[in-house]
Length: 313
Image (tube, rainbow, N blue to C red; front, side, top):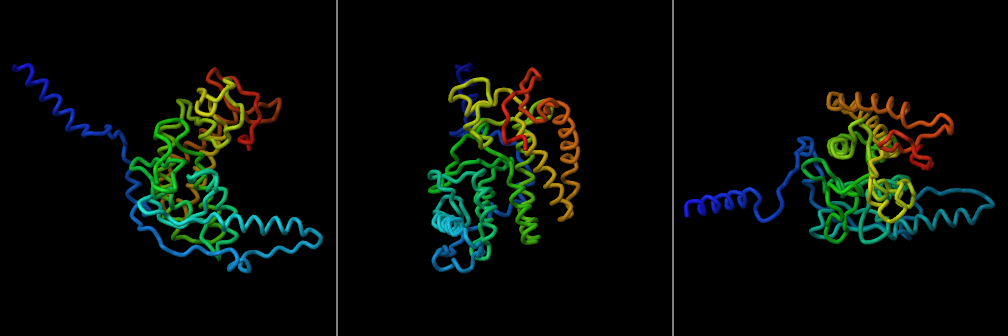
């Protein structure tokens, strides 16, 4: 009876630790406490109608190329037809442009579409589309790359290889800053971006400092980069050093350093300075093929792939 009571007490203790769900293994990042997007209420601004704001968009003039001009205006029309409002209880906090692939928003796609949208910023603040990712940041810095519009559900579990990326959010924010000079915005996004960068380094890097992803995670899921030639290639990292993911971290890290200089937070990126210096050296020494003058993915045995991808740029 005494032994049974000990076992029952042990079960109760474990139950108290775990509760009814899964043990939360987040290693919290203090930077996330400075993520102002987590605290914001959803906005309720009406969406602009293309027919009413068309005259406020950039007006191209190109005699003899009416077909190109028609395409230009059709592109804007399609863009404005895909503006959405945040749904109740979705965790979305701003009006946004949907990239119209399915019922979700995507990190990779959203970055590219807001880069196009900056030329229409006097009509609609496309940049704030990214706020709906920052508002879903986890306490450890993680941000899911695919989130359902209707209820804010994340479409991937955190530690699967395809759950997040590519990490090009700093690029979009930096380009907008160069375009607008909005220092307040730059300061707000710096902390969630840095926390996300740190999460990426912790959970997406190899012992040699390089980074990995998957077909879906890197945004280029139709490229045959892995030795396996089946649908599994969409989901696996193949134990490779992925050239695009590695270079994107160098690129994003460099941008975070520029941001830190402007907002006087340089001490927070000292480790990134060291990382991108060492990582750049590794990439140039170990992922560059002199014969073809090209950067390639690197397999775990040290050999290079022969698949040329746009990621090398």
